[in-house]
Image 1 (cartoon, rainbow over the protein chains, first blue to last red):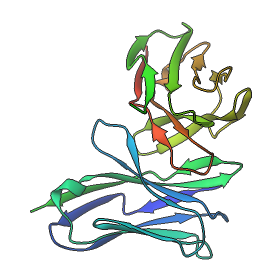
Image 2 (image 1 turned 180 degrees about the vertical axis):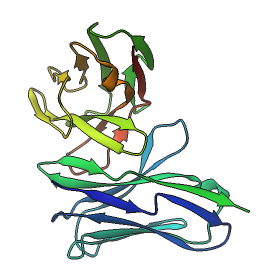
Image 3 (image 1 turned 135 degrees about the horizontal axis):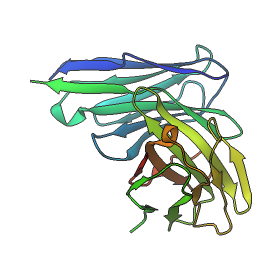
Image 4 (image 1 turned 45 degrees about the horizontal axis):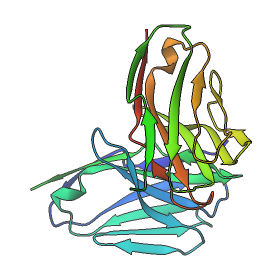
Length: 110
Length: 112
């Protein structure tokens, strides 16, 4: 059974510093997605990673995928308050079934 | 406006009373999916559909039914709801199965 593990589950960030969220998964897959959820809101797509070595960047966020290590990282550069949210990774289990991680709740403090 | 809509947004019901949560998208997407979100568990996929008349079970299909008679609609049916189906439900769609998914606003269901 595919398991998707995110860590940390909670992350308190200081403004201006850099942080990384990790997403490990337990079987081979080359399709991984990152989503953001603000409190009380729905999810919005951040990144789609469809091959080994894929790297995507948007503003202060950068995501990468290493399919051999079964690992994706979401790197946050110079954290700002607007980045406070819960971040989910999701892995294609095959046949386009998606398995989500438990989410990383990020709080950015001054 | 391109969007995924869900109705109702909030629902309180009693055990055993059949209910349907509707989901509709106006983006001509082929892929649609239902998830439930519970604290500490992330999202778990209930059912998904690759296209009209094609549906498949996700991780937690027990107690749920779906249908895809039209491309734009993907209703979630609970024939006999139970308290353990109390959850926040999201419908999502994507143009193709491997594309990013667009999520609806969510339906908060309470089963007493």
